[in-house]
Amino acid sequence: MEENTISNNNNFLPENCFIDYMIVNDGTRLRWGLFPATVEKKASLLLLNGHRDFIEKQTELIEFLQSAGFDVYSYDHRGQGGSDRKLDNQKKSHNPDFGLMVEDIHEIIERLIISKNLKEPLYLCAHSMGTHLAIRYLHEYPDVFKKAVLMAPFTNFYIRNKTMTFFMEIYIYLANIFGFSNFFAPGQARHSGIINHDYAFSRLTHDRARYDWAQDVLNKKPELFVGGVTFGWLKGAMKSIKLLKSANYVSNIKTPLLVLLAGEEYVVDNNTTFQIFDGMQNATLKTIKGARHELYLETDEFRDQLLEELNDHLTEN
Image 1 (tube, rainbow, N blue to C red):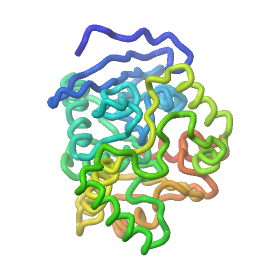
Image 2 (spheres, rainbow, N blue to C red):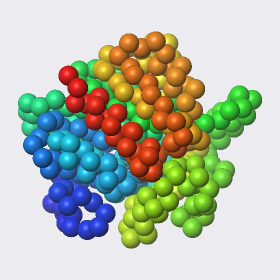
Image 3 (cartoon, rainbow, N blue to C red):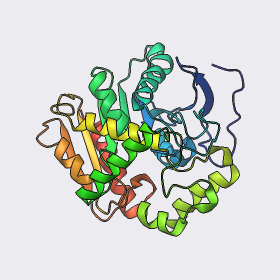
Image 4 (cartoon, helix red, strand yellow):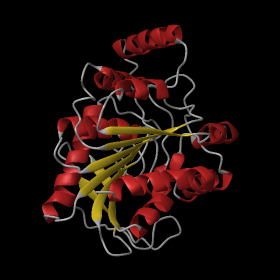
């Protein structure tokens, strides 16, 4: 770890926390945080955030988990938040190899959590793209987590037209073949000023105050912002989606799972999630009707349902 530990006394992170950096095997620097339980500790929990997210965006969820007796670990995925970006243009979201992000999870766990020889159980909680990586991790490392919660899983893109999906895949494939991997894909936000926040809000949550709070973090800490994805990111995502959808891949996961879906989902494809978890005895799927994609930033009407389900799953014997 490096010596330049950040002071955490600000308005965007829980007061009881520690933020630092870790350099993983390929030289990428990841920004991570430890948020100790504020009551008697029950267990440790790793919290994986979604695409383009950052630790601060999870503060309210982290505080709930702390108050429920969890030591919470979280970090910014490579390519976003306060972690290293791959390209000179720091606004581009470019992670063409999702496997590297899965290995980042393992390094975080081995070096920050398992190395402490913790006696308490270890749990996993993930949102959106974090759930995609969590599924891959649980498949490749089956004996690490006692239980896992997957919120609004990213198992596929939200595209209802199969013909459009077919041509999109060809387009992305050709763009990468002809050397456009590092280029923004069409329609992607090249800077923060181009984002239509009314549209984004209508797809992510019903709670404008929570949505605006997350944007306020970026206004005060613009270095945490990352824009739209590149053709390379899309290629990596499509390759990883095919892996998740391959025969028996998800069904081989034995960790007890709680999968929470948003009923009013416009970001990820719930149909794929239902298909790949179909028939799994150790997976409980529940839909929070009326809720949008960012379940943990929803209005209390929906968020309270999420927190109750999450706490019940992790604390029941």
